[in-house]
Amino acid sequence: MASNTGYLDTLLTSPATERYRIGFSFLFLLGVFLVVGQISTGMPNSMLLMAAAVIGGYMAINIGANDVANNVGPAVGSGAMTLGGAVVIAAIFEAAGAIIAGGDVVSTIKGGIIAAERLDDASTFVWLMTAALLAGALWLNLATWMGAPVSTTHSIVGGVLGAGIAAGGWGIADWAVMSKIVASWVISPVMGGVLAALFLYAIKRTVLYRKNLVSSARTFVPWLVAIMAWAFGTYLMVKGVKKVIKVDFLEATLVGLALAAVIFVAMRSLVSRRAATMENSAAGVNELFTWPMIFAAALLSFAHGANDVANAIGPLAAINDALSAGAVVTAAAIPLWVMLVGALGLAVGLMLFGPRLIKTVGSEITELDKTRAFCIALSAALTVIIASQLGLPVSSTHIAVGGVFGVGFLREYLKSNYASQLHKIMESHDPGEQEKLRPFLDDFRNASLEQMERLLQESKKRKQVPLSKKERKRLKKIYREEMVKRSHLTRIVAAWIITVPASAIMAAILFFTIRGLLV
Image (cartoon, rainbow, N blue to C red; front, side):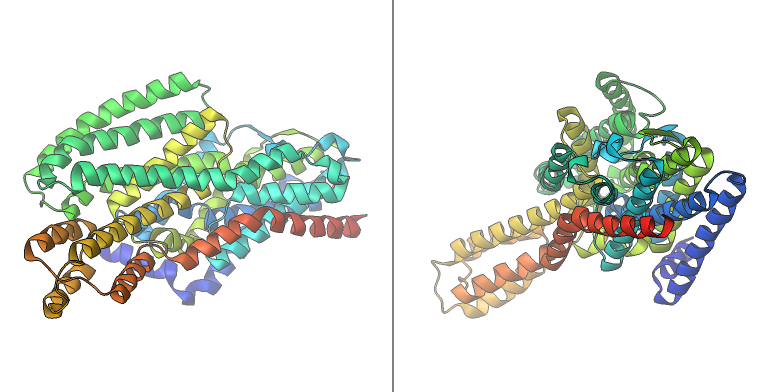
């Protein structure tokens, strides 16, 4: 089995298979074109619907390639799942979420950002939605190529906004709604990052910084996993299956609590059995979070498929209804074929192009282990729950990536803090003892956060010599760069900021192009 997953990992990431990925994508889109051609036989403007279906499939591929990485990236980066296993699980649960819980009706004007009644006719509406869909897909394609995880919701929002302004002028836009979307650029990553860092720090204080890690894990790990079970149970009821089962927040919370109680009993039994053979180290504690991480990745994927498939099929369903009814529609029924285009497109995009962003989120921003990945997944669910109750706009992509940066910056702060303690301890000692300092620095440089704390305690007893000012600055810089890659932070934040304006500009250009070709 290990050899099979290793082969799949290699196949997914091999540059030699790039042309096959592109070729398979074209085959999928060709299949969409032909099937919709059969379905729309005899309909007016069937060619326009076939073209829109292909664009919707292309958008779904790009959502799968870019957005889904946030759900499974931390699990892969931490080693809880292989890349191949994560791709297969996420593809299944994304498609299942889209088909089972994607809903029967979808809002055609994403987020209510434009007033559809200001449009002249149904043809203008169809051109607008086609341009928005294509612009959102093109921007996601570019962001994936750059290795930047961006919000697919913001991509389609920008597309609708730009095409809407091109079709109906500046007054068509609801700028109050847009201001909330801009606010989510800050709210989402900050909330995700702070919660992930707080949970990681709590785990360090209650388990990883204790002398007897096994005993601490037996006490606290079942509670931590039970909290995750409550969060995901509530999250799925509030967001994942809201279009299938209507429940209020209290009912969703009770479902989450029931699930948490079952998981707590199961985890307490599991940890007690593992304690007999578990090593008294951070690595031993990490293994306890493997299965929770796998379930978290699957449930996040299901909820994402249920919610974000609308970014691909919403405009497509709107175009289908507008062409059938000959009128502008603000809520469109979703035919089975439209849902299948979205669901299968998500799976195809993830399997063909998702590994690049999975690696970025999972291993290139900061080093993740299963404990850190657990905190990121937990913060993602909790942030959505809190934000939904407070009426705050959030982006699942920004939350997840913010969580990754949050745990990275916490690790960086702790190491820098330990280094500062080391400097203070050493400053009063004789500078002539340089030879004693050298082996200590070697140990300190290679230490984990937990080992660093023990080294500092030992340094007090051994009276180690102080570092020079230049060496102190160098040490701090080394650890700061080691914990979080600044280049990734800059690139990702820049991509977030320009997502809405970039997709809006492209959509406006595409709207005028489409109108010019069809008038």
